[in-house]
Length: 276
Image (cartoon, rainbow, N blue to C red; front, side, top):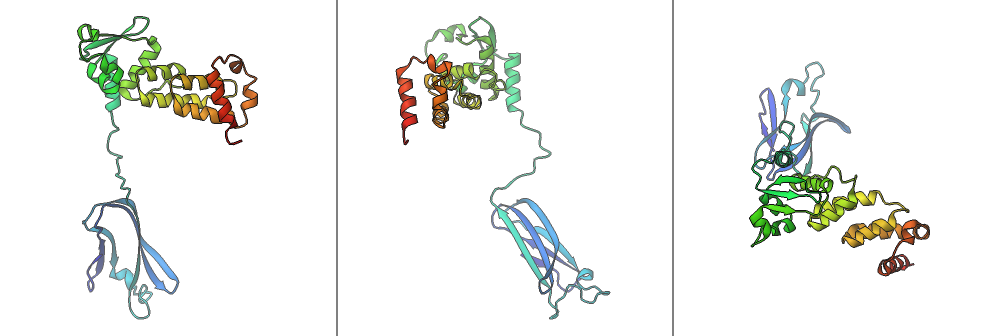
């Protein structure tokens, strides 16, 4: 710490940190035994390394009050100050004046207006979308493979997709913006699409959406989806749901009556019986 001034009209107090920190400081003056008063409180803020930071100014007229003689001085004529610093290594920067990131919106606009597109992708119904090879290839190894080596797509610049228009549009929106606003509307179809194009984050979003919809009535259908598309997290959560007191009720549902996979029934049985 650094004190500027001693015999003059003010004492200016600075402090310095050898590391960048996120810090709150409190300066307290001790009046008498067990009697204190906080005279400066600086809320959490970013402190740079090795730069003097202002804490407070103590004026002589406040320390020595001529009405209440030596208001802040102790019996031995000393000034007793207490400093408290609460430090975090998680430096937070005030970004109130910084505009929000527009990258995802800008890329989504690129999809919407088709500007500088160099390839067309068609839905199962034949609807066309003007897209960009570089974007598709950077997001999906499956789509990237369409443009490598001597593939038909390299010459025609047309990609045939097995997805319906509604699903394909949502997949493209995710590829361009990393957002899937309609994932809760048809997570089953999007899960299949995410698995087909190997979009792991979209797949996780679909698993989360399906888990939120999990009930006794649809548990078997969701488990079959999870098994079919290798959605490991969803499969684990669904098995836990079945085991957690729902197994008997689920065996009475229509979904259970339609199960044809012996292997799936075996998986359920082994999971429910494990550790019982």
